[in-house]
Length: 292
Image (cartoon, rainbow, N blue to C red):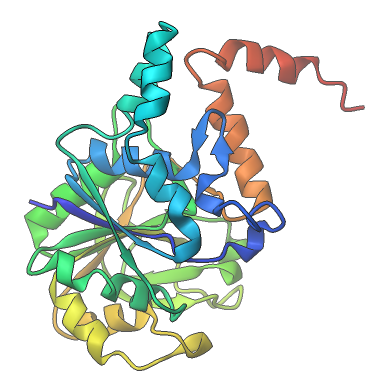
C-alpha cells in the first residue's frame, strides 16, 4: 500500500511575485485555507498517512500551519468559538504525520525528491506538486484511482490531462500508443518537454502527480544535472523506463495551476462557488458584477 507522499515546497515562487516575497506561495489562500492544505487533503483522502515536506528555511509558516497552536486553540475555546476550533484542530487527522526535510540548495525537482530518500526508505511513494490543485468529481478521487492502478499493475504512474492542441508547446507531453479514457492508464513511451505544435506525440500533459517505486531514489542519485543545471525528475523517470513499464493515468477531475496568477484566480472562482457556506452568496456577487 502507498502510504507516503512527498510535497516539494522549497521553491521561491517567482511566478507569484510580489505576493510570494514574504509569504510562501503555498500559503496564499484559496477562499478560506492555504493552497497547500487542499493538496494535503487530497493526499489524506487517498489513504496517505505520512506527508514529507521538502522545504526551505523561508517556509516555516507551512510547517506552523500543520502544527498545533495551543494559544489560539485555548482562546477559541474560551470564547466558545467551537466551529473555528474544530476547523483548526482537524486540519490534519490524528493518524497522519507531517514531517519536514530541508533542500539545502535549489537543484531541481529530482533533487528535492532525493532529499526525502532517508524517510522514504524502501517504500513506494507519491509525489504531489503543491502548485497544482486537483478538484475531484463527487464520486471520483483521481489520486485514489491512480494508487489502485499502481497496485494492480506495479507500473509507475504519471497523472496527465488533455490540453488544447494549440497549447501543447507549454507543457511536458507524454508519448503513448493510444489515448486512454478518463480514469484509465496507458503505457508510456516517453515524455517530450514542450513539443512544437503539430508534432506533439499527444495532447496529454503531465500535471504534477506521480506514483514512483523506491527504486527511483537510486536512479536519482545517478542522474546527472540536466536542464537548468538541475537534477530533473523527468530524467530519472526516463532511466526507470528502461527497466520497467511506466503508465500515464488520465485524470477525471480538474486542475488549477496556482503557481500562476491567472490559474490562482481561476481556482478561487471554482472553489468559491462550491464552498459549503460562502458559495451561494459568492455566486450572487459574481452575477451582480457589472463587467460592461
